[in-house]
Image (tube, rainbow, N blue to C red; front, side, top):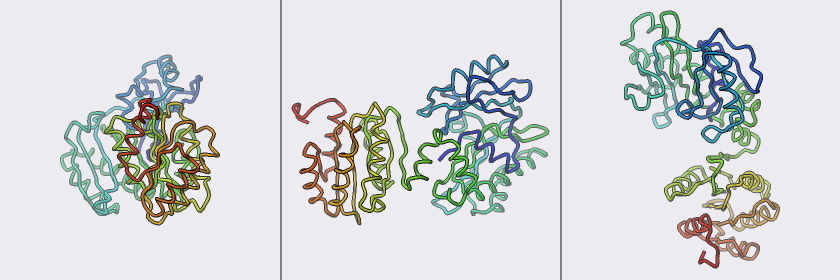
Length: 381
């Protein structure tokens, strides 16, 4: 889960990495702004690409800052509500790119550096990377290789930032710690932006990060859900049309990819973890409540591939959850595969005769497609 820039920079500053003076704006009244300007006004949403989406504006006067913050606050940017804007004094210097990330395939870390940072870093082709062992000393060695062409004293300053960034990633159990751009001048290195990705499975060992997430229940809605409920539900598109009730992260992602390839609009990712339901429909009820809160919803697809889970028990829980979810008025399609599938189909056939229950994914997807297109049973649904 990605932190908003303000929270990411708070962690950078605590790690000894310089950040621009800033103020956080959450309403119509501006707080005291840092310095004399100019300033950068940045929408605080946990997603990348804000600049290209209009979420970053350079302002010269306080009046321009006020106009920019009022324009952004209360809107949505790349699917996320804008509840705050970070107003920073403009930083200066040559732009560099620096990141440290977990490389799961190698059980190590990947250090990436580019002598030209900024919004076009992904297409500039100048970034170079090194794989290394997951400890600070190895990161230091890898970065020394990457910044060998930098002149002193800039090289020493960049190396110090890289060392602090690696320590932050390791100590906070982050998946990614990225600074882009890193402004390098004759006197300092300053983090122009911060992209920190948190491992939610480590939050119980990271009280400071847990506190950041808890302090922003709307900004980190999905993360707070996981911490409170113990399973993953991520809203992908607030205007999505197909709600997903699935178990298994891989299965859910596969289904999302398949729906997207067909031109459909999945609402959410879900790994409901049926093994933890323990005979109660409560978890299903909560997921249906979240899904049903979106007015764009047209259908719900339940996709469960069971190994240990008894699908007959799951079918009873699903029927009970639907009975206790009056807000769900759209058709539900269930693709159930595994232990007890035949009995599950019988149970749902009796309690929910209008629901298609099948083991065939293609049949389920075709039914969903017809529902979204507005066809009815009379039309040959």
